[in-house]
Length: 199
Image (cartoon, rainbow, N blue to C red):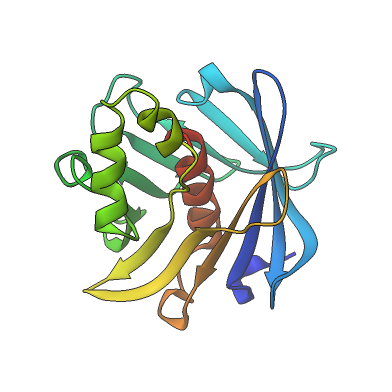
């Protein structure tokens, strides 16, 4: 299936012990559609190398995500096709993330495609203050990380929590301004946001 013509996906995290298990579905008008990708990885190994499969059966690899350097404070993650060719990469904006979690998303030519930022500055600041306060810090953990995708100061998409299930579910939506962005880059970003932001 060619995903390039689709602009909305639903990431579902299944509740498991010691394993991150994600499944991507097409998502249209708040309706979950066909499954398009599957990921299963030990939680403590997520920063190393992750294979995204086309289905739960894991017969056909789709693409991979790996950390360029395991101890890189900027968190640069390379997105590669099944032959190892670079598709693009995501990098945590360290300075910007001190106040508001921010990711920069690039194509294979180092061109900045867009940035993913926590939607609410107030919630981001409140979360950071709450982590130093007993009990309140635990409560803050259940507040979802919702992101906007921003390009040249314009909102061009979002990654937000979808309520109504025991499983974590996040809708990843891109506007027409991102129609030429390789969908594997978008899917990789959604997985990184969930796995590394402790959502």
